[in-house]
Image (cartoon, rainbow over all chains, first blue to last red; front, side, top):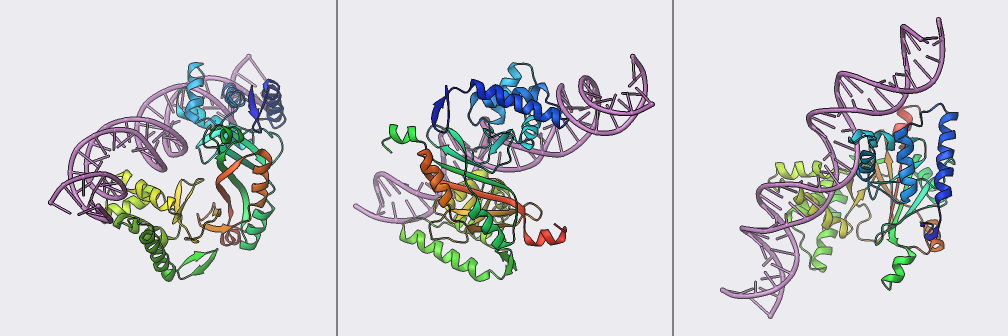
Length: 158
Length: 158
DNA sequence: TACGTATTGATATAATATAACATATCACTT
DNA sequence: AAGTGATATGTTATATTATATCAATACGTA
């Protein structure tokens, strides 16, 4: 049991369904969904939290899938480009996308106490308008919020 | 001449006035506005762009103000805590705050072509509402947008 | 001046990420 | 099924960003 939103849910199904989506996407676009790429995505989906590149690499290494930094960074780059994972800039960590397949500007809520990271969607109308006023052409957005998740608010009496 | 917004302006005045604001803030709050802290803020104000910690450290070093990493990271930490600078997570770089003194949730527009970084303000109502819906208590926000600034849109024919 | 706190100096190392080049595999054509 | 070009992986080295730790110094106040 892990959480989506900040509530518990069994995500065995979402792991395999997301992997299937990724697999199809790669087939459709003639991209190679290689062993390492697949396994990295699977790890991030299973762990369901933001992980450092080297944390993931350690697992790969134990499984004989590669032990040098480029192995993991290449996989993360591929998965990020295809939209299956996101980088949390604030944490220098990576998390599987929970809205894979659809283009979106993710918003992350990061609990500073327990480290939980939840991907949400927030209208970025205001951002778009600000950019327009400045004549700035948006390509990618990073929206990350740090604070306390519901659970941690309780356990620390806010 | 550097830029504010994405237009040119002479900011000699804003450098000295911001330094004065910082000085006053420290005096009022019994904080030490030491040589290193002052100089780091001055450098970031003068350069008027996002700089890596080691870039700033190199300058300090040339001036005999310290040559080891902790020197710069301590200063950046102090200046960030007091709200005089911001970290651009996406670039692992630091920039002087152009709205020093007032509490605010900054939005950064980062040009991927020329590296210009502009601090704007965007209403974060939508973000606040999303957080509320999730029961998440916001403490800090990171909003960073990458794309093309007006100048670079022209020079590259978009 | 003496005391406690805040700051700086200095050394070492951790954590994150990329460059560069050789080798292997894949996907497609012949 | 062999050749070919593009893609991916292996490997070594190194760059970049950041922190831990402890000693020495300076500051602010009693």
